Image (tube, rainbow, N blue to C red):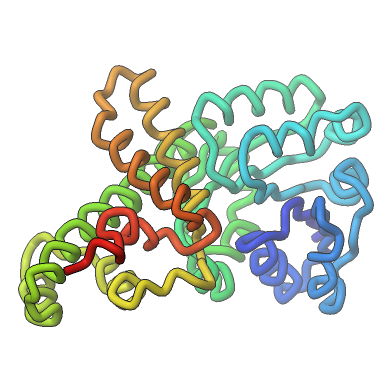
Length: 290
């Protein structure tokens, strides 16, 4: 099958590689053409523009940073004309209202649109073990389920467009809140001179344990935030989107907004492009350690 992938960054590149490995004919587009070289070396076709990428395949997968980038890619005059008769699968993290608006505009241009944001990072993208949260019609889901399984074994349809986006924001809110909460507890334990492994043994035996604590423990203890699978700046975007969507739905998002402020402090410390475990540096600054 011919598939186009627009956006070949941290997640888009390994996802495109999964499609190539599954013997699909893959066309790729990125605003920075140099990033396409590794994919071209494994058989991908580089498109010079979004319109060319969309026109090259009956289905295009989007893995772009935000709704603004999606609109820039899809709705230039040339790209809009190319949408007719094509299907767009949006797999990044955007707000439910943004996804619904893009859905209506794609449909107005004669195309089909569904969403399938993913939970997981680079290792899961490479191994095909992402969790896929689909918002679509039942017909679309059945049509594209086999393709989605290239990225995760069990894509789940949650409802119409907007439902997948909402659940994805809910999951990313948990990422931010759990990480901030763990950073605070770890910071206090560390400042009081308590053995961290003793602390972790108690945490692991409790109902409070989350596997993400162990995944981020060594990064926080060593203050090693390099080589991110999910940069701090992306977490800020997602916490901001969640807070806005929650408030619009009549939900008190004060706690999420507070975590967002912690993320903003980490970014102000120059950690925007570092791993999001850098929240620890904002919660427990090195220069105030006893």
